[in-house]
Image 1: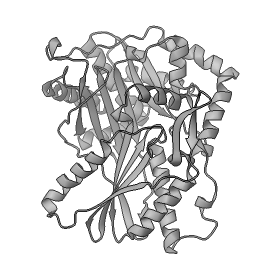
Image 2: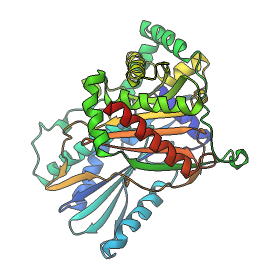
Image 3: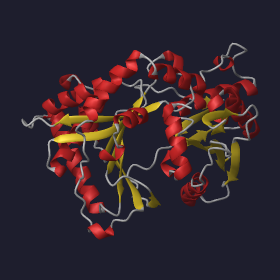
Image 4: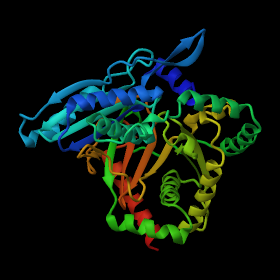
Length: 431
């Protein structure tokens, strides 16, 4: 196993975390041969080792266990074509949520599942569910591209034997072996020194909550509020990147950290973030989870100028990019650092300017994103008592989600926090 897989395998044995189950819903508009689609899905699973992997012990050592013959990945099919259109959306959500809520046993259950919903003759929904231990968001795009190629090949419409799917893809076991080689090399020593310095003075932000203390319990009420930022702010953010000599990620993170500083009334700010470790072409087609966590810690400059804080965040992020060979969980263990010392998280995703269109024959695939203004949903489960803030820049539009514990923060607090964020980002990008 990789270090991250080993960490998740251990934590899942203690307490399964629903947030590690990664759902993707895709709309397929056009004629689809379901039998051919099932066969194409099986071919993709045979192609990628991660999709037929389980996790357990061999001779007392935690390892990936790759099946030669995977179990059936298409686990359910529903036809809701006879349901009136106005109620189809609600029924679809109910069906998909029911399937996704099932816990996954890493030693026995298939960690990739696909459900097919037929809404009409030429209208289907694919509900893909993966456990994060075998895949990340990048992996989903790899699978969908391979699915399209296999589907067209089986229909006889695709390329011949030189199709890219005939080239063996990278394997997660090779990534894990590479990671262990790095751990024993000189790069590891330099990275550990960097992260020890970063983590030395990090402490929780402890954003004041607005609900009575006795309302909080050890069982968190996890809620998510989704939102869309005004279009003029999104446009100005992209335009301001050149002026700040920074990326949209850096600018939006700086705004979030300034807001945390204001709420906590202190100038030292630390947030957790995620990095994609796919820097080389050798892992572009890898299905696996090679994300990494990083703590970004800055001191908010006293001059109050947005540009000053953006420069601080840019410097911290660039340093973090340069020190991503070691898994964060290994760093924290060796540095004796508790990730609970960071109770705020910021994640930024950005789609390429022109995202590749994927189709099954003549049927176009469209990823279905959660409703932009969806009200919060509650669910019991463990969660740090802080704020998880996620933004996505796609097609020139910023959408996001804020996760929080409803035992500590009221909807009014979250509304106020989001408004303050939009105001602060507007001031940054328009000034």
